[in-house]
Image (cartoon, rainbow over all chains, first blue to last red; front, side):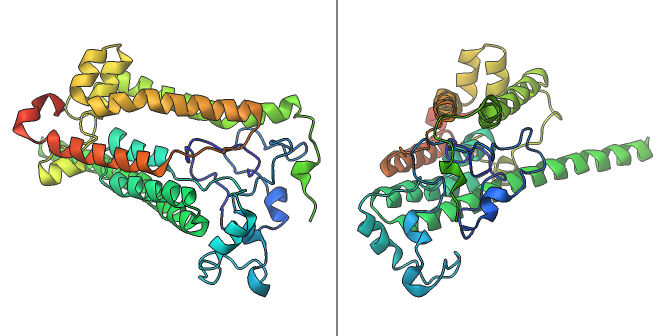
Length: 178
Length: 146
């Protein structure tokens, strides 16, 4: 699933490759998700022509940071040093991190969840930090935006489930009274 | 580590192209299905959809209030009615369509995403959404209310 070209700011969560997974050959050998209608083209997998590898990690994070082999995200060690790596490369070379802006807009305007406001804030942080060269910070904000996208979706599901449950309960109650 | 993505630089086979297009097509089908559902099940009828929990708790309109009725109106081709329900949501529809088209184009051309929206534009969107949320609860801006 890492082979797909990018989508509009995270239009499909759940099938996203974990941008923080350590780059291992398993990324290419793993099976497609269960709901995927057609398997990703692992056999003929070049999506990007001569583009750099489709990893969502900025390349500097693929360097062993100061002797630590591929420190996983969540451990704070490479964060402070990461912009130095990015600057050493000059331009941001990997694909920009997801801002999940589509999810933020969907949850704010097409649903009714004020969680979406926070999603917009984090989406804005992702792109602001990316533009200003703070690639590690952009990744961090991207992860928060992803969490809020998931929470918004979960909240929507919970509200609908509660509503259906309420209808069932009310229906049963009125049925008993009648 | 071998780099399988560099193995084939001549463009994909038919199967590869089909699977690359699978996700945009899936998203489009989901959106159309949702639109068909909202268009056929009228949100104006009570009991069809849950009330917005934010409105139920606070009594205030949120930026998303009226979106279901606006989508229902859009599904029936009633742009004026949709704008009366939630103008901001209606304005984002062409943006979302454009996003989707750009995504599809990237998938067809097999190029990764290189351009990101500038941060200030998303901050501007945040201000717009918050102003919209406040304004539609004010008595003078009843045309923004759902």
